[in-house]
Image (cartoon, rainbow, N blue to C red; front, side):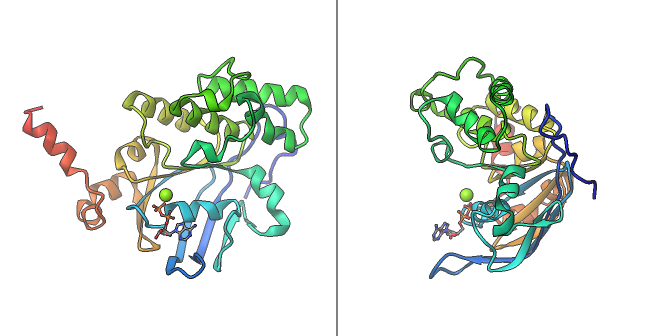
Length: 262
Ligand SMILES: Nc1ncnc2c1ncn2[C@@H]1O[C@H](COP(=O)(O)OP(=O)(O)O)[C@@H](O)[C@H]1O
Ligand SMILES: [Mg+2]
């Protein structure tokens, strides 16, 4: 594994990190097992999509990547370093989690302060903080939004501001929870283009396969607490029986096109 460069706090020098999940098991208090013996490896710089039906444990899995939830069995490692309490500051710097609900991510009065919060917490100088805020907002087409109140943004703008708070950390791993939900196709396309250009390992969770196909090299199917299959986007999307078994097939959409003779 390549060592982390010492100068990565200078402009854009973060290096993608690998993610190794081994034998992970988790249940919420008094609940049934949500994740069971889950093993998944993501290479540094890879874009992996995780598809799975509602309630499969996708969000629960993502919350383990930066230590918000702790494994009850098994382990999660970033660039070979186990996610554990003694290492939490470093792990949170490395792994950026984009929550499904932007209101879980935005909590200061203005967009600029929200985006500056993480970099400032890293102890970066104000000049570097300002550079990162500018750069992150620019990447999300939100240049000049620093002074806008977060509560005054539209839902789509709040989603972009939430992503900007993560990008400003220049994380080595970016994990996104249903980032395509409730976005118009044009916005999905912009987000896909952005994700494909990010110099980070990307893990993206979705119930919809098409945006994952556009974004990812490899797909994993999560159902009943386990990875049921993992393979190239082509292999997983082509396994229509597998998708159908888990309520994830897309034939319904294609049929609508066919019915119209398109
Ligand atoms: N905070 C929680 N407390 C108890 N049960 C939860 C909690 N969060 C999720 N669950 C349960 O865990 C299972 C997996 O949820 P989740 O990880 O949110 O699935 P997904 O993101 O794939 O829809 C579901 O049965 C859900 O009801
Ligand atoms: Mg979820």
